[in-house]
Image 1 (cartoon, rainbow, N blue to C red):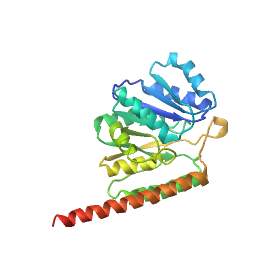
Image 2: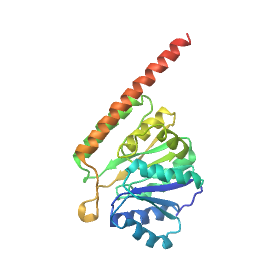
Image 3: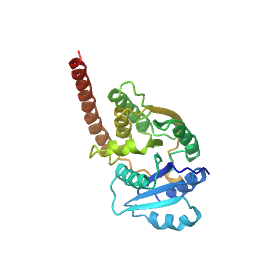
Image 4: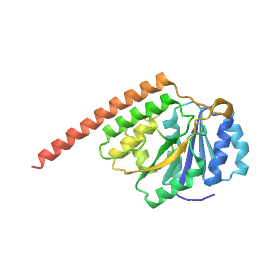
Length: 252
């Protein structure tokens, strides 16, 4: 287990069930400071995690009274992390998809280059749903259109290390980024802010129901949300290009 006064593991969770406890234990094996944000869950997660807290001294459980969405849960954790003195956060999903064994590698990359964001590039196994894999290719294409020259390896993979100050700053400039649109919009807006990307490969697992897999992804609702997000971001990218051209023309 590695300890750090600057780097924190943050796990948002909504009705993840028993899989959450396994994810937290796995994360705590590799990193000492692990915070969980219970995002209005009704599955008893808060009580079970509090029971585990005595055996995991670096565990902190934060509870939201109603479901606000992934991005909102992360922002809640970030605001408290700043108060606690942390400067960087590794986000990972509660459902067991993300590789806890790679936490140390991602944190080391962040500590070596603290101004950058460390983005996971997923390595899929044979259980990856084809629709999900194809859908993320489309989202990745749009993300790179919106951020020319930035090299976002994967816009949707939420296993990442962010500089907290930069992430909080961009989240406070928009009312979006509060739900499933958090991961891709965070990467795009941080690129616009000048934060460099470092892409690291990492395995991703799609657990079957009998393995405790839980998914709250809804193809219709969430793809509409992502589509609207990319419309906004393309518009934002065009405005940035136009402003840059006007600025450049004004200097000649």
